[in-house]
Image (cartoon, rainbow, N blue to C red):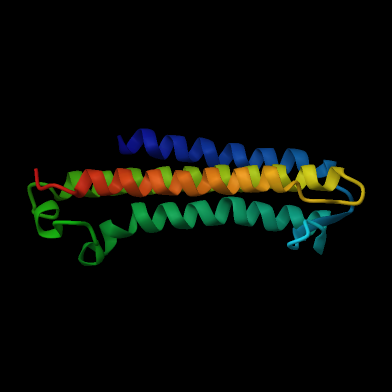
Length: 165
């Protein structure tokens, strides 16, 4: 399960980075990159600065999160916080527990990479308008989907470790 999750993670991060890199040229030289409550821009970046930021954010954040959740428990098992910790970290179950945590970390990284790619799409759409304007329905749909994804991820993790055996 962990191999599939990490392969999926690599595909998601690579696809998100490729999408961001391939579509940033569609943006104007000055990109409206931050929007206020009125959906009007209140922050700007150069296109090159935006590309660098989004690639760092789109690659860095998912990699950091996936590694923290998925790989750090192997380095610091005393820091693992799951229900019934002593049961799941018993030497008979430790390897499987670490594998499950690694897979969950990779899936969370996938979710983050897809979120950043979708956020880039929202910014592309906002900059297509003249003057630039954030589409609140698109933005809030994205945020709702992301929150739902996080909730499902938490529920899956909790369900996996809620019972002993």
